[in-house]
Length: 590
Image (cartoon, rainbow, N blue to C red; front, side, top):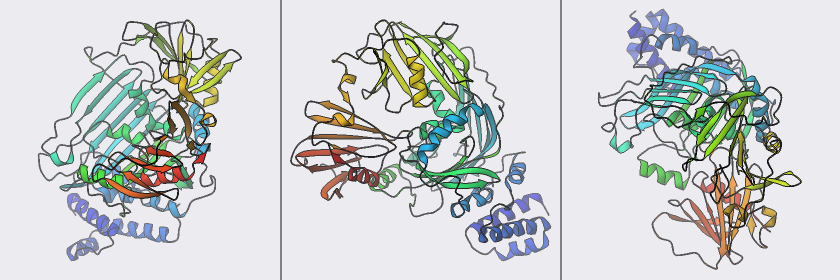
């Protein structure tokens, strides 16, 4: 039989299997006469029998065969049916979870991430991505590719779009991203609104930048692919379901949201991808020893704000559909340094960082940390910032110091919410809400210490630098930050775990910032008042909050109600209505 015919028949077998329908009569005849296709059908049947018995350990791994078939050329027919075969054993693990980790132990994942960091010096893997609900003409797209990583800041991601498009106006959404010690190149298309597809699509464009500082924000997000440290730093929004064996590899399964799992943005920030809502539900499987994410599934959330967002963006996702709208899977994972090569054109724009020896003192760090990159950059006004960084595998720390900072705010921190930290008897530092950066306001110099290490390691390192930190002036915004225990009497404050809570008092207005894992945050404001302002617009709905009639504005993502002489508002771009109501239910009067 012709290989092309068998390819088509096996595709039809896969789709019919997934949709639980019978094959067309002519295909049945082909399968009876073709040894290759009949063997393929028997293997699917064997998988069903094993899964029905709850035995996923013997499910055959078909990923290598599939990858071998598509590697020589771009297989235009290759669809999510093939991915369903690759991930069939994965779908079975929900019902067969082990007890190496108990449900809900999300707080321990952060500690495990820190202890596992030194063991991850690199990795390489094949990469499969499935994207559904892209457009009525293109219900799904399938990508294959690879990922290579060399610790601590070298990464190469390559994705090949294998989709069979209905019209030449559709362009393949191939993506290439390479990062190497301050240099970065991308080859990708540009985002397009669904209503303008496919006419808005353009050929992939090449972009390059060089001389970035160590661990620049543009680098940290892609590095989440090899370890979701920012997602796990605070356990809010991450629930451990249990453990399983994924193709023979021990894995931890967790439940989360798109806002918490920022590594998804590491993929979709480059290219013409569909959008995902911040509250969309995520199932993620983490390698038990390294916490490298080996599989991610995204499902449409059911909420008023998500429904309004979908209507405005033109998507037709069904929250009741049990099929994921986005899948990322790493196969053939090897935890050894991969192959990362980069060739940045000499004329590429420069971010201005100069690699050189600057003589910064080494902070107290755990054993194993070695010097990484050092050098200097300049502030907008020309002031010099000296930088030193150290790493131990995937873990890293950086110190930045300058004597030229004259802004009325802390050097290096973007939010006025900070937690004062005692560094010594006469020295204070200020910790960011996410706990990954600490600023020191010195008499002569200002210092920022940041890293992917634990809070305790970060504070110890900052204290060891010998810079005496002064309290910020009372005129600075950071001076208004207080701990929750210091809030005015009768102020409502959530009593929750897994969130960082910091507050500010400005006159009669009290503001509380809740910071969770990844990009999750909630702002709670309270002002004196006895009634809500009249609603403006059609996006309001009545909601019961704490036994009180309140309302929710889906456009503004704001929940509000009146209680004990105060108007209380909770606003979040990344947390949905149901969770806001749950957070409100935990509030206690101070």
